Image 1 (cartoon, rainbow, N blue to C red):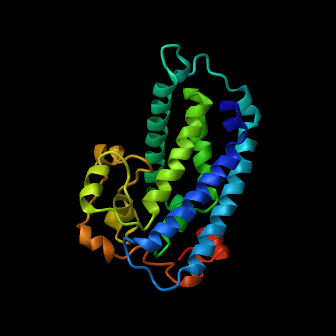
Image 2: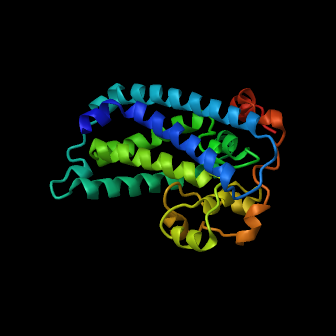
Length: 267
């Protein structure tokens, strides 16, 4: 079974990415958290087109980087997670927490360094936030993420299934957290102690700097709580607060060609 999963990882990731997108798009129409403008078709198509581009580019980049001589020749004496006392479950949990920790700080740096913010702002420029926003990233961003994360994974040396589980978990949770689905206040209040909820992450997309520079977590909010970057907003205000940026708000700004060029044609 494991051999099958490893051999077909890319196809599995593709099926999960777009399968959950379709499912959540349907749920968003039935029970939306926020009202959206009448026509979202153009925005959806551009976001999905960018998602497809990123998926296939990253599949290529990941293979290319993994086959590079540096990666092939990099063999630490004792990868941390190959200690005989560690079982697969423990190794997987450590892998998830470590990559989350690295991702949290990388995300904060993207907001602080002007050149990186130009790239990351493609994600924040969406004036609505729903499941199609999930993978609306400039291709440069996931490439940088791989370059930063891969050395950490090599040092940890986790079982391959741990990395696959993290990637699948990240896809599912990120899709849900960007979705425009309604979760009751009482449920959300308890869930956000353990996992990122749509209301928790949506604040990260509010076009007020205080909120944009908060709630950085991808899967768990623990590092936001630990480092003081967690914010909150009254439940009712989530329905009307303005999302996106104060610039790049025209419909043409969300066209794929404009999204790809936006880091180079700054406001």
